[in-house]
Every structure is written in structure tokens, then in C-alpha cells.
Length: 133
Ligand SMILES: [Zn+2]
Image (cartoon, rainbow, N blue to C red; front, top):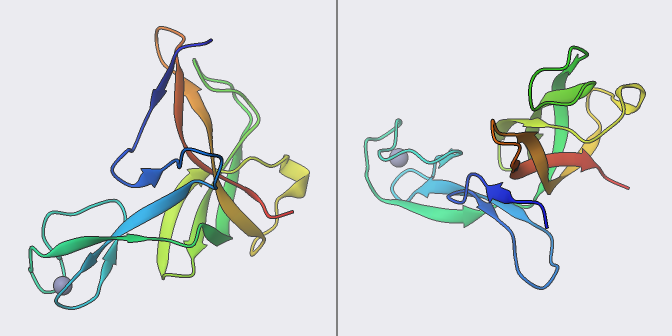
């Protein structure tokens, strides 16, 4: 099997047994504000009590761009976009969709896959989004 490295284990959960992968935000226990990725101190109330909160895995494309120029380790065309999550968070991620499929506001969900190859040709695995079927 090809060698793989999994990235973002602090906020990406890949369940064993085939359930869907999901993202985890960090919620301030004092004021309720959510963060993704993790922060060590709440930027709203300065509390250090942050707890993990699993997210729904759903989202809507807020904006996107398509990169047509290949770079080392990255395939082209490559769709990258901001996804708005129902939990009022916005994340930047690769979106596994053909350029002609892409629409602002389209429904997407979290998935896991290769985001690029590293300098040694190893697969870098992390979260991505794909259109909801
Ligand atoms: Zn807070």
C-alpha cells in the first residue's frame, strides 16, 4: 500500500468501521464561541476552557476558486473553496468536484482524501468536501 500521512488529527475524526468522517470544533465553555482549528484561549472572553464539539459534516460553498496550474504534488484542475458550516464556522478546503459542477451555495459534506503529495511522494491525507449526492 502507498504510504500515507494523516493531517489535522486534532480536528478531523476518521471513525473505524466505515462511518463518515467528521470535523471537531472547539467550544468555549464560558461564552459558547466555536473555533476551528483549535485555539488555546477564547478570543472573545479569554477563557481557557475549550471543549471538543463534533460538527455535522455538512456545509454550503461560500466561495471557490479553480487552480488550473499544476504544482509539485498537486493535481490540476484543483477546486478550493470556503465552506460555511451550519455551526457558523467557515473553513477553507479542497472540494472534490469538477469545475463545471461548482456553484456558490451548493451543498457539500466532509470527506477524507489525498490533499497533495509531499516531497517524498507520500500521500498527505486530510479533510476535503464533496458534493452531497
Ligand atoms: Zn469565550
